[in-house]
Image 1 (cartoon, rainbow, N blue to C red):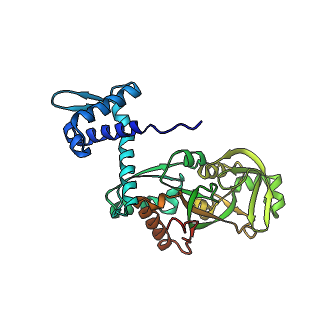
Image 2: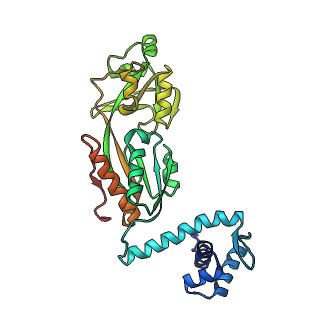
Image 3: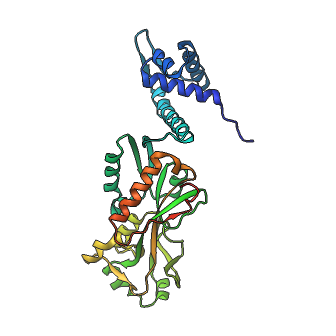
Length: 314
């Protein structure tokens, strides 16, 4: 049976956040339009419900307990989201503000995100951005991110997506490995090679090299959801990897890795921004999505920024 939300607790959390942000019960009461006694009762109710003291009160000051600091970090976000939701409903959002939670791949520096984000924050100084680096699909879904970057095909129909760029894929191996195991001359040769499998961009057990060519591969000593880990294993001579070319471009140029079957690989992997349906209506999300899309178009030859499935949101 689905639990009903406890609306009284929401009001108590908002009262608690108001006391902390304003510094006193009196200021919070004026801010909320309640009496000081009503605010005090709301916070006492919240402390009783969760079973811990949130505030240390004296006649001159109010300070947070350790539990209160944890609670405030969450309550403050609730207040921000409620306020912005009200603004969206009434059409009054005029500028992006508040906390923006973003997830990106560990190798995000290689597609300019680490330089784009500071420019975004300079443009929108009232936004506070929290950036988490993770290649995990689980982290993306359960982390409750406002926006996430994802390399590969999108995987959840509840998410809106914006396609930013595509990146060519490449088969690579170290010279030491190829001298020991031989150089594949046709795609079918890969089944006889040790393959380092990266599960984020490819299905376990097969690599799609082009529109018409998908090959079966044997799992080698390493299977990982991290392209960075797969690159390191390839450099160590553990086998053949199938990776985005931008990740190993320098390794190829400097002779640490060699391309395998270069004339047969034409697959491109897309980079998307994804976010829960409806999030684009929030000014902070809309500003970030539009800013990144333009920045990546301007700084990438042949970049693609078409919007997928966003007609209703826009």
